[in-house]
Length: 143
Image (cartoon, rainbow, N blue to C red; front, side, top):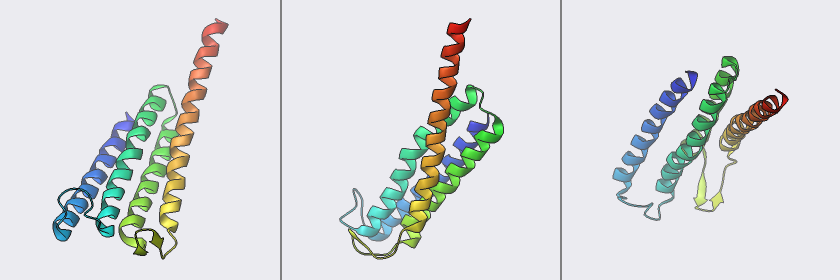
């Protein structure tokens, strides 16, 4: 099952983001929450955002694969999602500059592009599954 490979890769990325967040907590002396620290908030959101999107992506990918979506399509959407999530995390952790929590200095091009790829992957899978299920429903009533 190809979805298992993507689940494993995403799990490794999550561990990496979690370690980075733990290291930031130690460095900044923040045990719980973000300590009203912008840098800590960025680490927390990079990790949290990753988890929020990876969960639904893997559910959709697994269902699409079980329903017979071609392996090349599973891999294409899996790679799209992986690249998008890496771009998003990179932007939050390394690329963006802020003056204050709400005052972004640099244009977050990597975060925006990462979200576009994420939305394309998740949206494509959601639409594909709806089409797959509609075909099953129609075929059931035509027989």
